[in-house]
Image 1 (cartoon, chains in turn red, cyan, green, blue):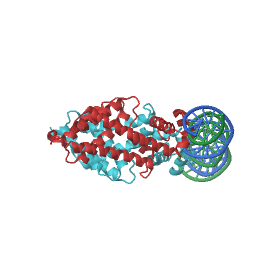
Image 2 (image 1 turned 135 degrees about the vertical axis):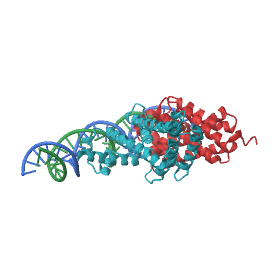
Image 3 (image 1 turned 120 degrees about the vertical axis):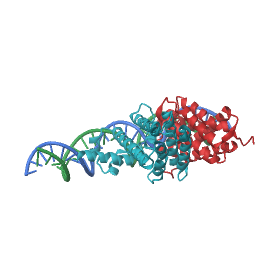
Image 4 (image 1 turned 45 degrees about the vertical axis):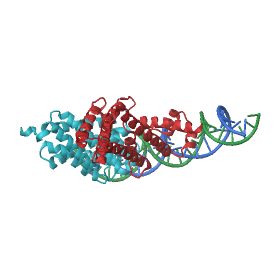
Length: 195
Length: 195
DNA sequence: TTCTATATGTACCGATCAGTTCACTTTTTA
DNA sequence: TAAAAAGTGAACTGATCGGTACATATAGAA
């Protein structure tokens, strides 16, 4: 089953790059830590960059699916789901393996806007904004894209600060902040599905 | 004048690392781009890491001084100065040389919390929070540290997203967001210096 | 069983990594 | 002006970088 072996490689490489960084992890160490020989890696991917791009595509899919499911599990109404973003983030931040956002870190190491890795990271943020906008619209926001971007700003901020502040109550404060902006954008608990 | 030559080196190295990243910039390239020979660099700094730490200390001083001055130049009252944070950030983000926050990028490349570079980045954020807390207290906030952290969350978020979204109006939206949270924390324009 | 595909480890490539050494030149200072 | 300090470029160390070559081992399909 070659397809699953390739998937296993990408999944393991994702963890290694996430924990260790992109430049800092060489291909020899990657082969050692994933348990896949360099020869086999280079049969699946022509370059290190292509492997990194594959890990980022997988991470994008996994993270957005995880967040969507947590939002839906934690709240039923769109308005409450927007707030639940920050309950989900708090769960993630508390995990011992939490090491900030992989896409923020990728864009920090590959800074040129035209670089495929940077562009993939930007696309991830765009897709998150689209998702948030959909929920904000269902919640009855008059300017759903604006509210979505504000929530995205808070999300990125709390992730970055959680990685730098260790052990603070920044996640709870981010939720408080989100509550304020949601209440401002959605007065009187108006919900588009209830109108 | 040896002290100024060393300062020049750190200032130039700061620009090179900020534009190119830490792992990605080798010492040979750094010597070439700063115009200082490798021999001289290693007379001033024992390791690359010590040089990076020196650039981060300089950046910390320069950035916080710059922000403080812009806040004071753009607004007189503490409450307005808190909002002016985001006018200052908008100016920075519009500069062609803007490439996100150097400390966020440093913590992305040196992820272990005990690493001196990571710790220096964390200290920078702590000092920013202290500064914001002072202004929030002057503005009459009942929970100045909480408001300060909320503004810091917005600051980090908008910087990261500006680097990933290129050309969007995220800075203006961050200011709108800041206005909401400031109004919430400081009702009736109460100012501690005016009470 | 035999063929084919895919895996493996190891050795290798030229380039670059961080850091050192050395012979020499420039600048500062007394 | 002469000694001391601090600069230079280039060669060098051993290690690692991304990527390749090759001979061998293992797996599934015919």
